[in-house]
Image (cartoon, rainbow, N blue to C red; front, side):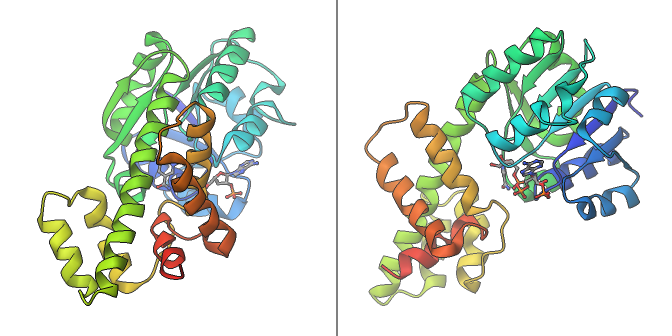
Length: 286
Ligand code: NAP
């Protein structure tokens, strides 16, 4: 049983299984989610519920966030009843959402101006690694805060790395999601091209997955492709955000623009809430 009392904001596809692992790992966790009914299953699993983010700051040693985007994270820190509405010097905040490096640097400075500590810790890996506790945690911040967070990370992931100061972890996260976007768009185009020319989906997926081009993500997404069913593990709208953030952070190689455009168009066609692999559905119509 850890003595650190944890607060957690954001119980979406990722936050929910991550908190479950912290409870299983012996942490006392108090949760807050904007949509309250998403807290129910975790309360049944042993979590307590808070009525505001501010309550977590008052009552917990470390407060973690796993929220959609930069705007949501800033609102939870700076909004009414947010973390900073009544500062408690010495508290540690860990943001595990995928946000821009600039937002992480901004929050790090802001927290420090109140005598509070901030560590960014976005994750590589989707819902299954979140459930299995095998995420890869990409931290940015001070070593002292990282060491304090390490027992928490050990319950959430198979690996955590302190990559540099605030912003460096987010940059690593945007870089790996660029590769994810390329992989999935490439897989979708490959399967569709083969199918158009008489190769069935199952056979083409076997060729990909049994050969040198197969990888963890091509294997993970094969069932969805075969069933033409894309329930969100990693919602397509989040990759649209991540590619935009990568571009804004200076990623300007030849494939970023067509890749962003492709996922953007899929989102405009109403596929934003489906899994990122639903890019297949949009490409199929081209
Ligand atoms: P999600 O299922 O869409 O959940 C988003 C969470 O943010 C929900 O709890 C939502 O609350 C909350 N939220 C959004 N706007 C808010 C606001 N203005 N104020 C307070 N709460 C707000 O997202 P997710 O898939 O868990 O992803 C979370 C983060 O991790 C994202 O940055 C994503 O890019 C990143 N990520 C996701 C994956 C993945 O595979 N899913 C993998 C790695 C990283 P409500 O319940 O009230 O809507």
